[in-house]
Length: 262
Ligand code: ZN
Ligand code: FE
Image (cartoon, rainbow, N blue to C red):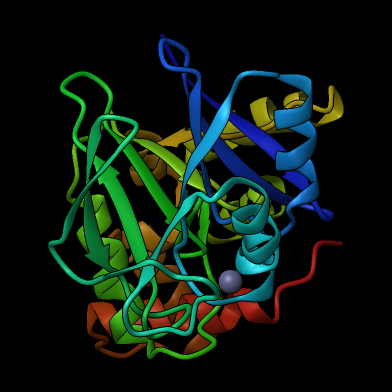
């Protein structure tokens, strides 16, 4: 049996813990804090943390690596183009790694940071995507280092993966992202339905993740720059003119950066 759970950290991070029950081995993605992982290991005697997968260099994704490596000897994978503490294996576009006996392909997805990578496992029925702070449920990461065109290309690339792909992003931002999605497309019934669903889940303290690419394509404004409804509202806000898809994406990202929920 194979299981993937979210270990909450800080105010809204999830450390994804992949568990191979047959071998009692596990791997963690983006451990910004060691404590939740060490607590899980203490509660599960006999289990070994074998691998640590890192998407980018921000502190809330790498802060626990050194302590976890010291405690468990786990192998640390991370982007070649960024400074990652204790990194054993430097990864670049197209690299393939085996973790817990499953193959993951590495995609370079610059935008949030310049060296950001994502990990994709092409399971036949439900593939998995660990995309850090690039694609969020109903949103995307802020552009700290890359350009709008870079982030837009990265997101489009992820959107090209199979619809059934499960999206494991790092933050529980879904509800606030859906507030923005509703402002962008007030008449999109899929966004309204997701807003109601996620509101109910969050009220119960339940995670809104993982998402799926099918759901993201239907409700995530940053994957919907080509929709007429999105073009029209950007024209309304920023003045009507011909805009490229990258320019539309840039307008949306700037709007979101200043967006406040009232
Ligand atoms: Zn980040
Ligand atoms: Fe983050």
